[in-house]
Length: 255
Image (tube, rainbow, N blue to C red; front, top):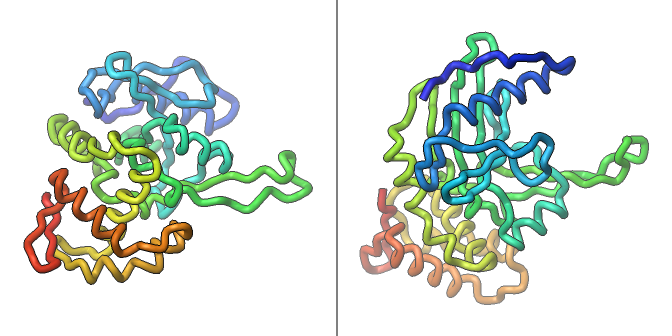
């Protein structure tokens, strides 16, 4: 995989359009499908509202977000209601996050987020556009990156260092069990995984996860049995090799 960004054969008037063309061309030339290992991703026709790339082998789709600066806590996305509807119908594409250095013409960081991690809790509703805006009243959304479990942010390039392809494929398949869940169950699992990440330690107790009871109650106001639901998710994560139960309410993340 090469890290250099090549100049396009033509120039847009807009610098952002030029950057978009360069980064999309790099993905099409350099990135394999992290789901199945197909050596190339194919590009959809430009301005398609659904996704930017697809894999001709497994049919997975990908959306590219690229920028010069490091990604912060959240990134802007499309219309809020459309995003929520796509989550409910499971038609969201996987996400590719690229940070590039235009001065050095290099890709500095590249992460992929499987669509299985896109649940309502990570989508933030933005304020409606003002009455004087061209699209007055339009409501956009943000993807809150920090709410995506760490295991769902799979690194392909970091500080110019390329991760081994087999490691990327293994990490992608590590959480494939989430694909077999309906949207509601997957939401609970991802949110509990995020709470575990927030503890910032490899070993933890059931009581420590119970500290997030209020937070999870706000996410799921219709559920009056949050603690049993937490235990259910921990058991499911244990059964699928994500956690190890060590007895007496103690758990360990399996690396």
